Length: 451
Image (cartoon, rainbow, N blue to C red):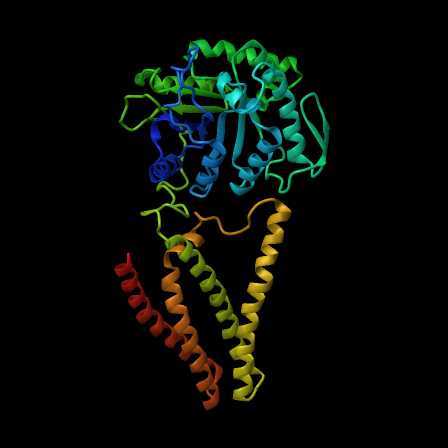
């Protein structure tokens, strides 16, 4: 059972730094996914004719696609779930495009939850018909899956016409999983036929358990396997007493529910949340306990360090690999008994060739493989390699540059004096060690002063 958290739309506010801190903390704690509600407009309850609903124009809602696109750059593994997106009030082809782009840029981390919604004011403002939303959503889901899995689509339905057109780029997941919200009888039968899973609203476990069994029965009636049908239940920390959190989590695990999502909004608790029994062997484990640093909005909103570190990483990696290529050319020149000038020129030529090979062949090859396998083959930002070069790229650049120059000068002098290969390589190693010690100390002191 995967563990998620509801993004506190109405409480978190509009500060990008607070949003970043919350989401990175969620990922660092080991949560598997983040779920966000959707509302485009809030109505004025004092409008002529009156209006009644749980949210008004005073309640803040971040737009889910834009929000998740921003958060995808600040997280590494967290799945993003719309819970739910009010699909019939949006243009289907545009939703397909936005979802495909988000799925691509996040590396396949989108789960699209959809539903009908209840706010007729939003439908009116967005130019859509509130009365036929149930019929339209079925056609929308069919069309979304067509657009996500085929380069060209010809579609003629009751509400949509696509005359031989398609999306580019397509998403990583083909198709993106579509889960349904809703608790009405018609909604339950619809999601059992068309959905990949169900996103029920928050309600007490005793009230929800019969509905879960009912949905599984409808899924079986539709000729599908209930064991492969996902169910994402929400547990409100406001409604469920704190003493019952572990028991309710254990109950849903025993029921075979695939996802459990915590709702902290309007909760009075300010202490650390623990819903797993102390002895639970399957307690979620975070691969990285510290909240990972993203590539924007760190200590200050204008901080340029991540971009600079990434650029330095590429420079250091390229010239570092080329340096080893150069070192290998020196004993080869000696073994072939080349004159010193020729050996030196050969070493320089091999050095330049190494840089060209890495720059001209390595990047295009990686990009081609990435497109072939529909995923990025670049080092993961949370990998040891990335963290080491990102954090110490400046040190590496300061060390490798003088070491490379020193080794080249030493090699040419040694060749000119006719030094045997073994002694030459030993001298180069000793010189490199001295350079490393001195320059590393200076670079570390410089970085410490800068930060």
